[in-house]
Structure formats: structure tokens, C-alpha cells
Length: 322
Image (cartoon, rainbow, N blue to C red; front, side, top):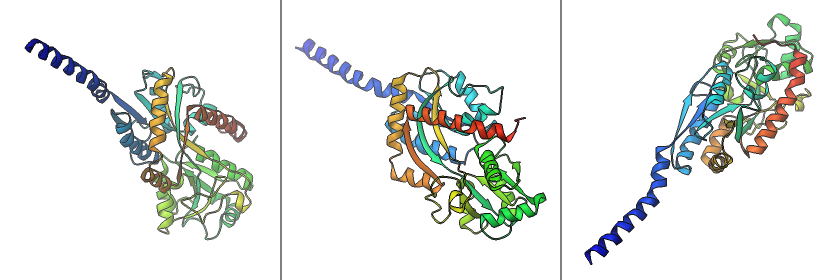
């Protein structure tokens, strides 16, 4: 009798252990989301919002690691060398994948062959902002002032070879006003010079200037998207004010090439669910970005389209990366 009781107890214990093992194993695994920019920027904030949700939905540790350098190109070079096991991801802005390939002959990665797209996270446009270094008025009057004062005509961005760099270049070309590009090491220092009057114009994500705009320190005069920005409903698009050009971008989540489809789908489902959270959505909208999930295939298609779209304007610009 005792022998039968012990056997039954042992069997029950093994059954419970076998059910608990996957959960315990999952908790021991760690997914790393690498961000190629310093803490505090929009990419970093989105990664941390996601990580908080993915810890629960994936039932494992999820940590964010900042690996800044070369406008996100350094971290993509590291991702290329990471194990394709679904445990290492990069949250990347589109510029490093669709602009950089047209500028650098020695990129440490191939934007198509070296990565597995996982999820598109957000889409966004850019804000064209003026400060005390430019006269009051709408964008067309500021551009007219620049045309009359070519020595003062400049625009700042978060860096050379970025989407804002070429969005500003398109604005200059279409408006017929030569404007000198000034590259900064990030959007924050560019915004400070805009506020200080050292530069008259800035083109960058709305997140860099939206709070300064609300405080009256700078003025966002236009956005570069096809539609008005939800965070700036009173600000027109470039096309609405008669400047026939537009520019947009996206953040995507990528894994190394060769990552199993099962792992990609598992992460993508968790990301899609996280982006439905109203709290996360409002925080993303607050940055002037749009939560806009799409699965791997759609992210890959969007990347390919943007890669093709920017080839002509970049070649026509004559810009050469150093």
C-alpha cells in the first residue's frame, strides 16, 4: 500500500515538474533589444515600453541595451554577428537601412541579406521648425527671407546622412531656395541651437521640438508627411502650403539573418499585442509618432520601397559621405 502511494506521489511530482519546466526555462532566457542611440530618445523610449510588455507575453527576461554610434549603423553591424536564435533584436530607424546603403560603400552590413525583419513598430514624419534666428511668419515667408539672405540660410538636423538631412534637401530643391545643411550629433543639440538663434531652421522628428513648440520657444511651421500629424493638428503639411514634396520614415524590429520563422512569429505576435495597449499608444503619439504595427513581410516590403525611393534623390544631391 505504501509502495503504491509512493509511486503515485512520484508520478504526480514528475507531472507537475514537467509542466513547470517550460515556464522556468523561459524565465532563464533573456531577449536583448539593442538600440543604436543614447537613452532618452524616441527609439530608446519605444524599446523600453515594448520590453515591459514583452517580459509578460514572452514569459522571459527582456532588457534594453543602448549601443550608440554612427546613427545606428554600429549596432546593426553587431546584430549581423549575433546568434540567429531570436534572443537578440535591434530596434532601428529606417535611415540606417534605406539611406545609409546609398551613402557608404563600406557599410558593416547588407541591409537586406544580413537581417530578418520582425515587426514594424511605428511610422512618422518630420517637423520643419524655426526659432528666434528666423523672422516671424509662415514657412514660405521664412524661405523668402532665406533666399534674400543666403549667408544665413541653413537648417540643422540630428546628423549627416539621415532621413531628416535629405528631407531638408528635398525641401530646399522643391522650394528653389539654397539652404546649407548643418549636421549635429543628435536632435537635442540641434534644438538647443535653434532655440538660441544659432540656426534659423531645423528638420527632424517632431519629438525633438514639440515640447519647445508648445512652450513657445520655437515654431513648427510644417510637417513632411502626406497627412497632418495627430500631435500637431493645427500644423499643415508641406503639400498643403504648396511645397510639393514629402518624407516619412519608420522604426522596425530586426533579428539576425537565419532567425527561425517560429521565433519571428512569436515575437511579432507579442509586439502586435503590446502596440494595442492604449497607454503605449498615447505615449507614442505624444512623441509625434504613429503606432503602426505590421508583420515581417510588410516591414520587408516597406524597407525595399523606401530603399528604392531614396536612391534617386540621394544621387541627384551629389552628397558624399565622409
